[in-house]
Each structure stands twice: as C-alpha cells, then as structure tokens.
Image (tube, rainbow, N blue to C red; front, side, top):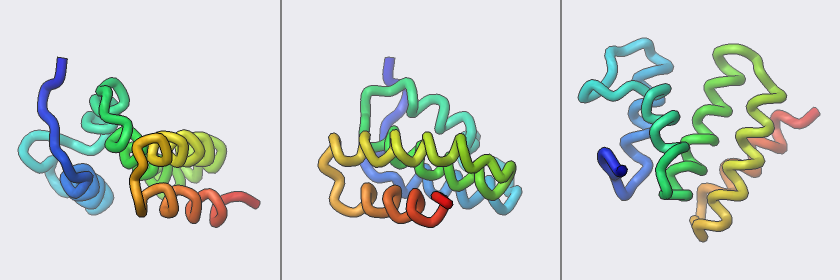
Length: 100
C-alpha cells in the first residue's frame, strides 16, 4: 500500500540535495530509499521526478550516461502523462545536455 505521500516533489528534491551534500537523511528518509519507494507507487508525477533526480545522481556519482539517459526518457514520459507543466521540460533539457 501507500506508506506516505506528498503532493509536491519538494521533499524528494530536498532528500536529493541532502544526499549530494552527504548530510544525514531527513526525517529518516534517504534519497535512494525514496526513489525505490516512489518507483513502486502509482503516482506517475512523483515517479517522473524521482527518475529525473536519479539520472542526475547517476551522472554526478558514477558518470553513468547510459543509465541516466534511460531514466530521463522514462521520466519525460511519466511527466508528460501526468500533464506536469514544467518538469517534462527539465527532463528534456537534461537529455539534450547528456546526449552526445
């Protein structure tokens, strides 16, 4: 079932920022765990945001361009299906930057 939900991706983006800065997890939730959880939840908007942030983490942490590109393409698809207004553009911009 649904463990906890939030309407805005600000919490996930905060978890990502804490992860990048090597801070302790916020409220006991770390970025990687939240991404795994959200990818199993029915909220396609948050799935799309989670995939975009995971793609950014793949590039920064592991230089995994192939994995990041797959995540970004799937992120864009989820965000378009969710009718998100700004987030598909962010995924598309990142795809453009990392496609050589």
